[in-house]
Structure formats: C-alpha cells, structure tokens
Amino acid sequence: MKDIITLGIESSCDETSVAVVKNGREVLSNVINSQIKIHEKFGGVVPEIASRNHVGAISKVTKQALEEANISFDNIDNIACTYGPGLVGALLVGVSYAKALSYALNKPLTGTNHLEGHIAANYISHKDLKPPFLCLIISGGHTHLVHIKDYGKFEILGKTRDDAIGEAFDKVARVIGLGYPGGPKVDKLAKDGKPTIELPKTHIEGLDFSFSGVKTAIINLHHKNPEINKSDLCSSLEKYVTDILLQNAIKASKTIETKTIALAGGVSANSYIREKFIDLEKQGYKIYYPEPILCTDNAAMIASAGYYRYISGNVSDLTLNAIPNLKIS
Ligand SMILES: Nc1ncnc2c1ncn2[C@@H]1O[C@H](COP(=O)(O)OP(=O)(O)OP(=O)(O)O)[C@@H](O)[C@H]1O
Ligand SMILES: [Mg+2]
Image (cartoon, rainbow, N blue to C red; front, side, top):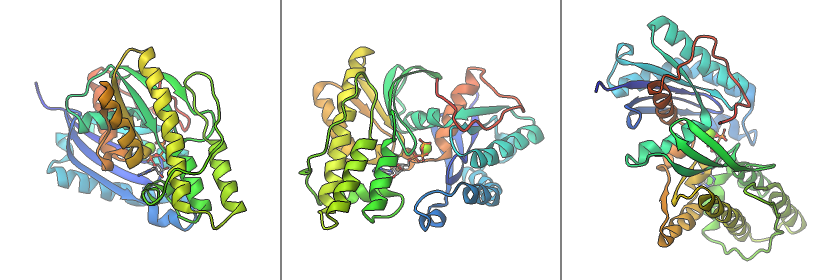
C-alpha cells in the first residue's frame, strides 16, 4: 500500500505546532513552538496574545516541519488541523491556515478533535495499540474516561463535573507560588513530600469526577498556614487525584470488559500517576501512555488522528470552522 503522509497543524491553546506523520504512526517531524515564556508572567494563557503569536509563528513552523521531514508540500496526502475544543481565536489561526493550504495545494483537509489527538498520541508511542481500549484523558481542560470502540468511535463513560485535573494542579501551583504551568512543578516538588495531609473526599456516583473541592481545600490550608509544607501538599494532592482516577478507571474497565488502559493528555506525564497505573499491570492490566513530548499539545498527535479520519473517508470541506466547545463523540 502507498504511504500516506499527513501534515498536522495544532493551535488550540498556546502551542503552535506542525508535524509530518507517515501512515498515522511514524513521526517524520514534530515542531512545537511554545508560548509558555510569553504567558508565564500573566500566570496563565491570555487568549488574544496566544492568537497573535500563532499568526506570527505558523508559516515558519510549517516550513521547519517540512524541512525536518525532508519533504515538500507536493509529498503531502492529507492536511489535518485541530478545529476544537480550544480557544476560538487560537483555533481559527490553524483552521484558516490549513484551509488555505488545502485550497492552494488541492489536497484533502481533515478537521480533527484535539482530544482525539491526545488519544492518538498513544498510537505513535505504541505501534501495537489498537482499539478497543479504555482511555483516561487527563489534560489542562479535560478529565474524561472514554471507551475507544474503534478508530474514530468513542463513548464518554465519565467526566469531571467541575475542574479538570490539570486546571486544579495549575491553580494550586499558582496560589502556593510555584508559577505556571503548575503541573510539572507539582510533580517535581511532590517527590520530596509525603501524602500526609488529610483532604476532604467528594463523593460522586458513577464514573464522573470532581476536583474543585480538593483544589479549594488545599488553597484554604495554604492561606490559613502559609508555612505548611508545600511538598507534602503536592504529594497529598497527587495521591488524592490518583486514588480517584484509579478507582473510576478500574470500575470503567470492568463495565466495558477490557484490561487495556491508555493514559493521554498533559497530566499523563505525571510520574506518580504513571507509577500507580503501571502497578495495575500486576493485576493483569496492560497500561499505555505516550512519551512525554506527545502528552502535551503537539501536532504529531493531530496528524495521527487526522490520518484515521482520512482513511475512513471522514474528510472536511472548506466550510470547516473552529468549534471552541467541540465534544468528542
Ligand atoms: N508532569 C506533570 N504532572 C502534572 N501535570 C502536568 C505535567 N506536565 C504537564 N502537566 C499539565 O498538563 C496540562 C497541559 O496539558 P495539555 O496540553 O494536554 O492541556 P490543554 O491542551 O491545555 O487542555 P486540553 O487538551 O484539555 O484542551 C497543564 O495543566 C499542565 O500543568
Ligand atoms: Mg491539550
């Protein structure tokens, strides 16, 4: 079969990324231009600034991705871009650029869901992984338990009713003075601490999650006692969220009768969460997670998801628009 080359474009938040991926699984290039340094001083992403920086970066990043893959526009079979969920102004830059390329080069366009991309990052890191499986998407904006029934066929089994885990990590980190983005800093500091701080449990029926209570509890503890050990706070937060993730993931895996669980999204880079999920392998589970660079936003994962849309004939036309609250199923 002829190789299919996909150009992936990601601009949903503060990373301008363009990648070239062969047959959905082999990364030929994955250029990520992060704006973290620009947004750091504001303690979070400023949407208008993100959009402007995407506009300034996208052509250069695309050129670099083609050069690193050692191909030209002629070699591309499919152009995949994130069209949601994300910041509308940021998404529009990638969508407009992808549409312009598709029109000018007369190549197919596949609008791709960003969360589908996070899931597909696992296809790149693990050539043997195939649906069906259970995926736990833990990112800056989402905490979803998803049944991956087939490529492009998803059912959400549970999700957060308030904060996403990444959001809770980032907010706690900001209040206790660790800076932005907080997740990696919480991860590092927690290694020096112990999970000794008692945190109030939020009980939710079924497979949904809630993290705003624990976030507020930690922030209040810090306000009441600014001298409280930050490493212990971070370690306790990690243990709290991981226990709930494990509990619901195990419940969901029994419901859909699978022992294959893939982690996805930025928070799946967390070393404690990984370690505890890997422990499940002693109980016969098979645990997958992407390599760290593919956990946070990148265009290789979008190219992979776009490839599976392309080969199933699920292509877009030039009416494709950004959808900030796009759902996965
Ligand atoms: N090692 C880590 N431990 C915990 N959290 C982490 C780690 N590395 C990154 N994160 C968190 O991952 C999040 C970013 O992930 P990602 O890029 O997938 O989110 P997003 O794109 O902003 O949201 P979404 O994908 O839901 O739209 C941030 O909240 C960041 O703090
Ligand atoms: Mg993301």
